[in-house]
Every structure is written in structure tokens, then in C-alpha cells.
Image 1 (cartoon, rainbow, N blue to C red):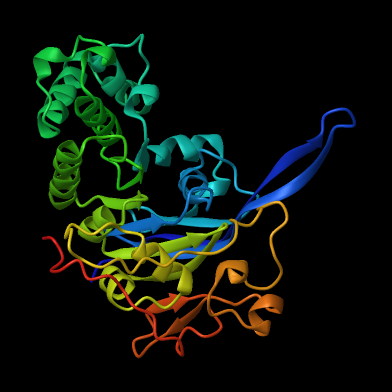
Image 2 (cartoon, one colour):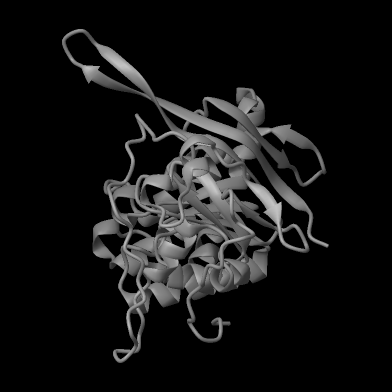
Length: 343
């Protein structure tokens, strides 16, 4: 049975937002609120939600690209040690940072235009390992072939490559240190559909070959359904539902998840639209509504929803489906029929 590789507990992130430039007043805005989940070695956990729900902030806090306000990220090392990744000293952080890497949304802005592709891919190796030049050249050539890049093009600069090729360069840079976890932040959203399919297939092949664990952040639910083992749905900085990909799509247990699923376009032009239109505006993170933060737009909201914050609880027979809705087990919500899940 696969082992847990990462445990995130009560992760919070707060930003100070200026409200008055003259008097320099600011208010705290909670972007992540008590985020808790685990990550099993070799799986793909997708994070979905509207823009501004905190997906990217979560990914950056997990790999310490941003400092979390509070909470724990416990990393299970290869030698079976549990380390608090967020509170590592400089020496230990340098030792373990190669194990958790990130692929950014825009491959062009993520690549230094003044560095050659060889220098971009080899930089993590030179920073984290004491290797001879010949060894670095061999490793860069090998990883370039793995991601479908011609090693003879390594002396070119990023502007000479297409969007799909630049994303392959970003993937090669993330893979070069042989990480155990990769955070993919909208890794295919900026690409054409045909290129998206190539990158998704590449990520799947690399996962099978190297046993990589992915945190896959995306807006595209059709991609999420194809690539995921489990899905976490975020709304206004909270995880409101977490379950296997099949349970999320076939049997959602939160009204927000239901609305997200209904927004996915269907390929059949004759199909009737069953989209759920959410009324009202997205709540202000700096002044969220009381009770359940989704209640102003929820068609099922009651007085209880307006006053009490729902806890995320395990529901169902196997207790592996989590929902933060007061009426999760009572509401009869519907998923979206995409047909057979892509293999």
C-alpha cells in the first residue's frame, strides 16, 4: 500500500492589504484557512476552484515559496523521517528542497530569457549537487530526451522555442533533481489543446517511470478528471470538498462543486444546457460573509448556513469523502456525465 508522503495540517496564509495610502492603514486578508489534507506517494491530487480561491497560494506555501502564517507541512523523507518542511533551518532546507519542485503556469515568464536552455536545466543540479561538468552534461542530455527535447538545441534561448517546448523545458528543470513531489500550477492552461494532451501524457508517463507525486492545480475540470486520483475543491481559501475523482464527478457533496461541474462545456452540440448560474457576486476575501462563506450564492442555503461555519467532515460508508456542507448527506446533488473516464 502506498505510503503518505506529505501531511498538511491547519495551513493558514494571511496577507496585509493597504486600505489607506496616506495613513498606511492595512487589514489582514486570510487567503488560506485551516487547509488540511494528506498526499499519498505516487498519486495525483488536483486542486480546483474559481480564480482567487487560493489554489496557487496553497501550492507555493506547501513548497515554501511563500511563508505560511501558521500550520504544518510534514514531509516523509526517503529514509522514513518526518520533517516539518516549513520550519527547516537553512542547512536542512537545502537538503530537502530538491525533493519538492514546481512547474509554473506561464513557461515563458518562468524561464530566464538571458540563459540558455542548458543553463536553465542544469542550474538546479549545480546548486544542489557537487557534480563534474561531464556528469551535468550527461544528466541534462538524458532529461531533455525524457521530455521530448532535442539535446542539440540546448544552447538556444527560450524565445526560440514554442509554448509547448518551453513547458517541456520547465518540466525538465523540475525533474532534473529527481524530485518526489511536483506542484503543477496550471501547467497546461496556456497551451493549445493538442499540446495540452501531449504535456498531460508526458506527465503521466513520467509519473509511471519515476513514481512522482503531483499536486495539480487547474481550472480545466476535463483535464482534472483525466489526470487525477483525488480532487480537492477550494472556495475562498477553504477546502470545501475532498474525495476520489470518481466520487467528485459522479456524486458531488457540496453545492459549490455541483456548480463548478455544471459549468464544463459539453462536446455534444445537441445536448441541453444544465448549467447552474450562481446568483450574486464572489465574496470579498477581506470581508467574508458570516457562516458558510458560500451561502450568499448557494441555492440550498438555510438560516443555519448564514450563521454557522460548517466543518469539513468525512461522509459516506467508507468515510473517504469529505465535505464542508451542513447538509452534505441530505442534498441530492448531481455530477456531470463525461462518459467513460479517459485512461
